[in-house]
Image 1 (cartoon, rainbow, N blue to C red):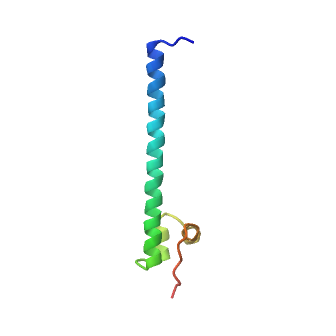
Image 2 (cartoon, one colour):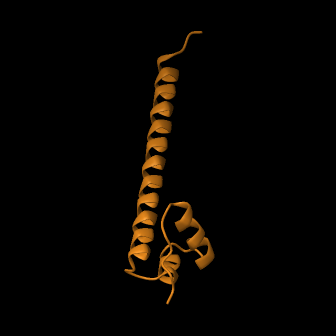
Image 3 (cartoon, rainbow, N blue to C red):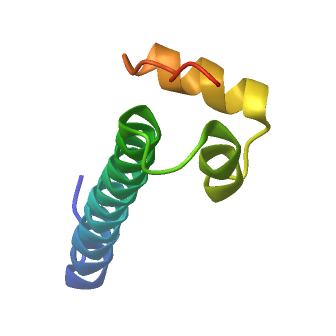
Length: 79
């Protein structure tokens, strides 16, 4: 198969674009995970409560507690 220079440039550019989009997506996921872990750690440490943690993550309290436990964090006992 013979490709013109224009076709080759288009193919390379598309591949580079797809790679950049993939890397950007991975970075965004990492930032979200890091933010969640920081919030989970703050709640576990008692810096603020489960209600505030849920609010900061736009989750219901039940969703937040489930996500926090799934990530390996302890939910503090409410007094």
